[in-house]
Amino acid sequence: MAGDASGIPELDQDKYDADEQVKIICLGDSAVGKSKLMERFLIDGYRPQQLSTYALTLYKYTTTIDRKAVLVDFWDTAGQERFQSMHPSYYHKAHACIMVFDVQRKITYKNLTNWYTELREYRPEIPCVVVANKIDADMKVTQRNFNFAKKQGLPLYFVSAADGTNVVKMFKETIKMAMSYKQNTSDFMDEVMRELENFELEQNKEESLQTAEEGLKPESPESV
Ligand SMILES: Nc1nc2c(ncn2[C@@H]2O[C@H](COP(=O)(O)OP(=O)(O)OP(=O)(O)O)[C@@H](O)[C@H]2O)c(=O)[nH]1
Ligand SMILES: [Mg+2]
Image 1 (cartoon, rainbow, N blue to C red):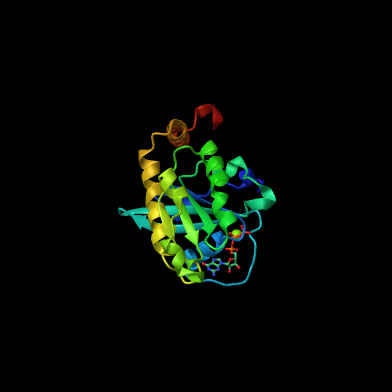
Image 2: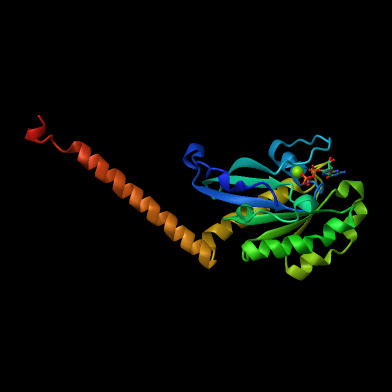
């Protein structure tokens, strides 16, 4: 189990001035290159040293889609053999998933089935992409058939965090999928959550109006 993420405060959307906020999670065995892919996308860089992610890392990224400012929270973790599975809060309210394997290690491809099963337990409907990483090590792999993605009807991207091939394309398309999921979801629980959020917003508005009105009331003669 990864570190308990439930203690993480909700990100402050206002602070980033975003119209929308989406959460994208990353899954896959240890050392498939999850963190390096984030690094490549977010800072257009890549440091080859081996550094395993400790429990959970959160990256924030802002972009504009259809003239809307979008704040993306990328969740990266060391999910892997060491922990077997993720804490449910990792999946909580995620809008898309990037599932990575290493084209050089067959076991990481086989384990996609386990990651996918767990993902669907918590998030049955969110868009998910399959990412075949490290193609720089052997370009021939792009000719091979990776049937898992096809069988599950998921998009498959051949990428390299080391040289950057397809990294931006994969992330941008995933962000778009996350946005469109958020806007058009038919997931019942998500609808309920959205209603609740709207309800809370309305309530807060009413409360602050009330406070403002009270502040405007003339002081009663007794209090003078
Ligand atoms: N050749 C090659 N090596 C890569 C690529 N991406 C990552 N690596 C190497 O693979 C190793 C693991 O990369 P990480 O990004 O730390 O893997 P991770 O999936 O985040 O691993 P955990 O944090 O343990 O879950 C590092 O030594 C990287 O340099 C790639 O595209 N090509
Ligand atoms: Mg990592």
